[in-house]
Length: 318
Image 1 (tube, rainbow, N blue to C red):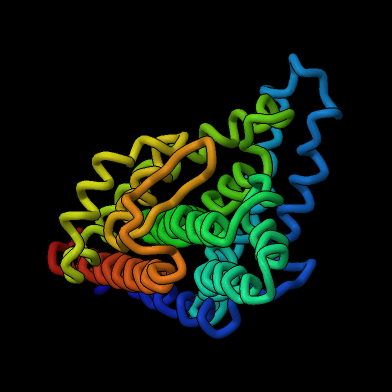
Image 2 (tube, rainbow, N blue to C red):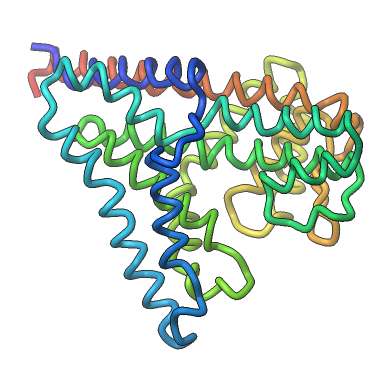
């Protein structure tokens, strides 16, 4: 008998992409990630704790937060009848990644720039943590498209990767939920400011979780740019600039994107990635197209792998 759980998982993965494209991220205070963010905002205040206890406190609350956020996904995956699971699981999985919303945020920044640089600064402030008050239009676009590129791993490929990885064990939704919880805590606490101690564990574990997905994302980016004739350039820039950005995950993805699209990502005083043969006004739409191509090709590969695994289990009788 063909393992139906793997077939269902592959269908859920594909349907989740469809749900995302149809509804995006509804702006509701009851969205699971919105509830997660409010809980993190409650405990994630360094002033509440003595500095000497902040690392331990951050680690403890990381575990509590992940468990609380993942529990509903675990219970649903464990006890829902297969038909209910097939209907509802795509919506739950969609709650763990953001594809359409990521594009919309960047396009909102581009649209805001048409109303002036101040409007662009205000809009991009919703996407990044850097000081936007002095950014010129090209640096505003850079901040927006950097966020899109980095989140190609964090907010799209990684949740789908862990869903596929843990689906053979019946825990695909749990895998995606753990990643979403970890990434949200890193996004809110993983900074080198007053949150550095409290967010230390969140930042480190997010790096660990995203290590393999970042390299998978880079592989799919390079493969995409190879079909566009810019694969060699993407590879060269990735090799040269991949370590310029702090951390060991985001830089390689951003460098591959910059090289393949022929643009430059520039965070003043921190890093410059890419050669900038084209401006971001010209090359920005290519970044959106690359994100779409990688998302679809990775999802197809992950779903196909689950089906292949199901077939192998069937013919070998494992």
